[in-house]
Image (tube, rainbow, N blue to C red; front, top):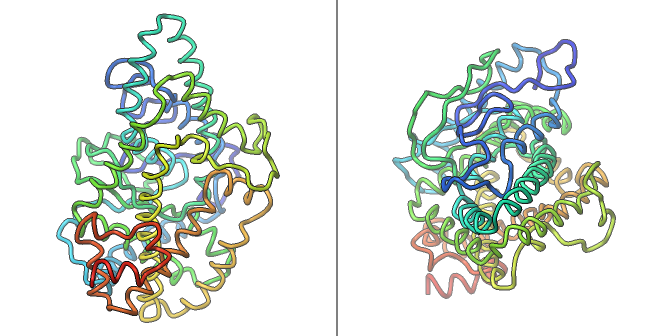
Length: 418
């Protein structure tokens, strides 16, 4: 979200509290090494540098208007917390401890790389150990593969950085690294050495401003509407203490089933990314109907059951956020009906052929279905047993809906409520 003035070919990257080293610096001061001292399967620093270079700068906006937008998003996030608690009946004493960060596109990239790097660290350590056992030749080949994959991951992150309005980052590092001062003081700054509870809420200011302009909706209403959705995710994880550990366990089980041969894993990952119709990535599957998504290409048959459970959980979380957003909306967002109608049309059509192809290949179409399926499930349960009855879903992992129950709310009510 650059201020008005000469357009720069390379957007500035103001610092964001969380993990924003200067461009080209190591995210954690580790460079390409894992905790075990071996080279990682992805050059994360190169991924960040590539994504930061390629990320579009966002809408042109005056500096004062930009400051006002960022300040308003912070206020709306605090306001949304109260609305979400009252509507859902989900109390939490931990919400105040999890940060709300207003970031730009490079900031979103850096934060996500830090979180993803944390999640896959056990797998990278296994890969590093396997690679070290292969001798110098395997290490050199692994380094080259990690750099190539880092570039490709960076290209994908650059694309996604322009699409995400907000995100609850479930697996943010527990210790937030230091970051340099922002030259404009616009975005959130770190407190050096600050230890925080797991998780943080990211609001991507340039994307929110861009979409509200594209939809031609009231910006104040739209910003609060977005905050209601994202604040619901923060409430879900802070009010349900076991939820994060449950999802992390499922993800770790998923990764444990992954082929730990570095060459095989990198080839499968690069095959997935190489199918994206972007310059320098081949585009072998551009335009093919029914093309596989990245998740289809990197999973093994043993992982499908885990993925089905994760899909059900994600459908629940996304659908619940959509229902809460629309439930609270009429009371606090005057133009909510107009916003929902226009936003849904935009979500359904994408923004062009390339966008639609990327959405399919990256599995984003599946995420859109999660919004729809999950919302139908939540509404179906609430209609039968009310919000208090629905909240039984947060009792334990056993009360989460299965993938089949997401499409049949009555069966979940029968099993859990009785």
